[in-house]
Length: 310
Ligand code: RIB
Ligand code: CA
Image 1 (cartoon, rainbow, N blue to C red):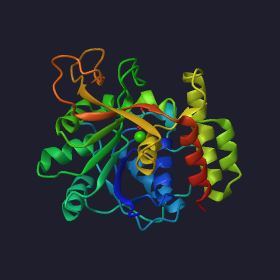
Image 2: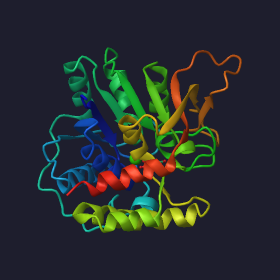
Image 3: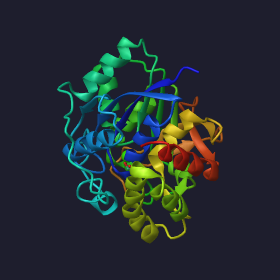
């Protein structure tokens, strides 16, 4: 089976880091490049974290490209309360011995997608600033597929209305959904059912060098989620769901939907209004939206693949 070539556009971030590790541990996908964006932390820190995670996995052959340092219009907001000052607090991960490429992330994305004649899947797991800029600067660029972490049919997380990645740069997100590409939205409705529990963390802790680092990431990440979401059974693995969906599409159920991003200045800005019930006056679907996931099989995939790394 030929692996699916992917580029992960990310803001590591604990769950981004686990998504990167899941990708390099999985023969079903080929991680050809990583681009970074400001989101969970500044782009300096998210870039440093991407380099550190790839070096941990022994994959410094995968190039990293630095992207946008702030949203199109909205004020930059980082999340140290979730991911710490470094954006990857918890384990003592050494500073990288490699550095990012000189080319800007958006130019790399355009070059790589063109070189592959569009035959590549974009996996954005942070704010969509880079991807929005890509389509604004290079309207000819048509990746064959986008599987993005963001949004929600129901309750948000950054605000009651909006999920963080979309809230951080709603204008960029709206541009992406307007492109009419094969786009899958992995929202909180499924990621809150894709959790890693303490039992999974303990199994990874005992599964070698990288497993123990992931366990330390989970120790830090779970601290916030146990307080904010005591009703969740474990910590939500938002970004890894995108990669898991490409590894095993049977894990997540999707529905055709019309997704519209609230770019107003009101209290619900950044919300994804998702119509998956074919309501009148909503036009043709512009995305597939995750509506259910087999959380147990997802968690087993994470533990199995992380344990396979060393
Ligand atoms: O709302 C969750 C998303 O915001 C995840 O991608 C997390 O890493 C943060 O970027
Ligand atoms: Ca992220």
